[in-house]
Structure formats: structure tokens, C-alpha cells
Image 1: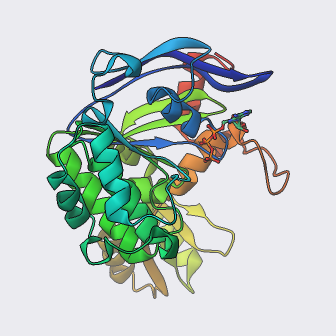
Image 2 (image 1 turned 180 degrees about the vertical axis):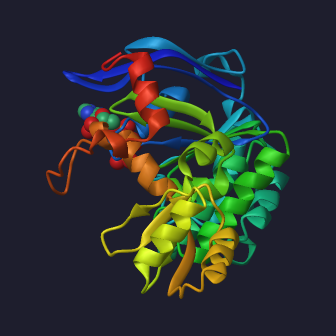
Length: 325
Ligand SMILES: Nc1ncnc2c1ncn2[C@@H]1O[C@H](COP(=O)(O)OP(=O)(O)OP(=O)(O)O)[C@@H](O)[C@H]1O
């Protein structure tokens, strides 16, 4: 378990992490989400004792990182821009790490096998592709067979096969009872991987919720219906007590009624339909709305979202905490 209590980091005037309190639990994948510059990497660096908190505390299984004996056997991490010696082979890179952490050399072969690098283990890492480099970084994280794993943006720059592989690996590690904490700025990626979400913006906690709850609150679905007989459809809907909204292109948008029921209703009234399509609000959109106020660098100075377009739960959440809390 990883426990953050009022974790804070200032770089001069800049507040990178701001009173972050949350617990990352074992047996599940926890996604750590936030826009660029939100403070994810800084938080992870503090978890690993690489940055000293300005205030607050972070503990791994109740201990500070500095107090862990053989830390690689407690916590393994894949950070951005992993350093390794380009002239060294993958095998020797891992062997050096193993020897300096009192890990048996045999373990090097096991992790190389797990990440699928056995066939290139003796090649210099200089020629490694981005994907091979990520696999080597993950092998290093797994070397001490740790109970806690941190992955900072592990799928950045990977091809679909590599993304699929890392996704399944993280799920397997969590299923083995480990604590898996993975950062990303992509909601769509996390939706496929994480069981739980911790969302931050400008260093502050915005949400700490299960993925199921996030989806339930944000995947408001509706059915889009297009017809060349809009008046007839409006009347039929009205007589059935169904309310519909009109979209900009003249289609009807209807919530809380299934496509089958709407299709049947149209058929009963002899109304021709050109479209009858169930729609789901995208989670990426919900995440962007939740973090919109905290994004540091905008590509354009977009208008603030109207009140009715704010996700109810995110807005509530901010109100409960109070802005700037
Ligand atoms: N060593 C440093 N000195 C000064 N400012 C820093 C330092 N490291 C990070 N920051 C600033 O702290 C904030 C948080 O940065 P951090 O890298 O933790 O964010 P992030 O969520 O990991 O972003 P990204 O998704 O872009 O990697 C940013 O504004 C960044 O510019």
C-alpha cells in the first residue's frame, strides 16, 4: 500500500504538488491521471525518495523509502527517460542492478523472459527501439519481485502491440496481489487498464474514485434519431410521454429510452427513420472537463464551458472541496 498524506512539493514559487492525500491499494491497477504538468512525475519521484517533499509524507507499506531494506524488493518503477549505459547489453544492465541490490543473477533471466527480451539480451541497448527500451525499463522494475510497482506514462510512444502488452502485464501484476500505480494523461488508455482513478490538476487532488463509478457517472447515454418526418415523430414521442432534445443537425436526442422501444414506436406510427443510433458520452471528454480549469498550457483560449456542460460529479466535487482548497 502507498499512503500519501498532505504531500506537497514547491520548486521556488511553483507549487508542483499541493497537499495530496490518498491511498493506493494492492490487488488493483490505480490510474494516476492529470494533464501535462499536473504533478504526476513529481509525486512519483517523491514516492521513490528521488525528490524531498516540501511538506507532508509518503509511505510504502508504512515506511519511508529511505528506511526500506533492499528497496527494489519493495517497490519497482519505470520512470520517464530511464537512464542506462548505451554500450551495455540488456543482460549486463540488469545484472549490475541485481548485483548491487543483492538479487540473484538467475532473476535476470526470468525478467528478460517476462518482458520478451531474451533473444536480444546480449545486444547493446544503444540500438534498442523505444518499445524495447520500455521493456528493459519494466524488466528492471520487476527485478526485485516487488509488491509495489510504479509506471510513469508507460505507453508513451509505443505501437499498438506494445500498448496491449503493457496493459495486460499491469493487469496480471495487480491480479497477483501487487499494488500497481500507473500515470497517464490519457483517459481513454486508463479506461481500458485501471480499476481505480486518482485524478490531479495543478498538483491538487480532483478525484479519487473507482473506474466503475467514473464510468457510471459520465457515460450518460442517449439515442440519436433522424427522420424525414420530424413533426410526426415529435407527436408520437409526445403521446408516449417521451421527451426529446433537438441537435444542431435536426436529429432528436432521447435519453432514458432504448433504441428498440423508439424503433417500435416509429414503426407503430408508420414513421420512416434514417438513423437510430445509441450514443455514449466519451470518458476522455469527461476527464477533460474535470481538469479543464487546471490545464497549464492551452492550445487555444477556449471559452469556459457552460454550467450545464460541466460533469455533475466533478462540479460537485470541486464545490465540496472549495476552489483552491
Ligand atoms: N525540477 C523542477 N524544477 C522546477 N519546476 C519543476 C521541476 N520539475 C517539475 N517542475 C514543474 O512542476 C510541475 C509538475 O511537473 P510534473 O513533471 O510533475 O508534471 P506531470 O504531471 O508529470 O506532467 P507530464 O504529463 O507533462 O509529464 C510542472 O509545472 C513542471 O514544470
